[in-house]
Image (cartoon, rainbow, N blue to C red; front, top):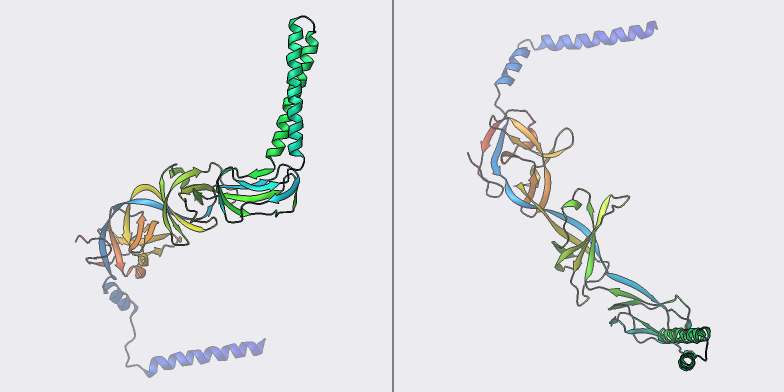
Length: 365
């Protein structure tokens, strides 16, 4: 313990000697006066900034969203009967019309069953007509006539079923489109429910986007939307669907834009950028390099008021274009700091030099 005190005392004495030597070795140098330093600081010039006065302009708020193209209709056309696949008249990638045959299943004995059912219906009709004649002569009871009528209806139903089975040997397209897949090949045994072909309808083609809950209320069915494809195509479409139930995770609403695609040039699954129109607002065009953050982390711009005092306005970017960013949140006429905004703070008085700007706004001195 004593050794530690001795070491500490020796170290303190050395520090005092070093300080004393500096004071007396340069006695000719004036000792700084703290009051004089503060006075010189108070007399220094104010921080200088360059400002320009900008005015708001009417601008349509737009929503730029990313989505993808999807087919309007997609169907897995399946076999409704069992049998050997004997023909596949169309190939993958072919465009087909509604009602066109996609697959043919062997008829087997289905045609013979139709002929048999037809003969039974003719027989039942003759028996029923004879029963009616006998009933008119009071030679046949009403119950026997009813039995004849029942046999006729049964024969008609059986014929209808046999004809339906025969028609089902030809699997046809439920709508016009393009063949995407064909799981069955000639010679396969098709069971009930086996997919003969997958059919896509790409005209019109749809673009699906997710719209936030803040913006979905401004959308209207039928309004025009501009769409830019990843392939370079620029198209105009219309809003054809606005979802009423939000996604459980993203809390966004599915929206569809319909695009005319008669040549099927636009494929499903392409990335698309959709520009949706919105309401008209008053906005200012500014350089993105002037954006800054305040102490709370809000994005905004630094301006000065008529007393040359710095003010901070949080802003919202409604459009980002090649010639600047359009923002809302500023007063109608704003003195925007264009040079030196990063070196001043909110509430500080500055020396403002106004300058005419040819690119952003107009200065009114």
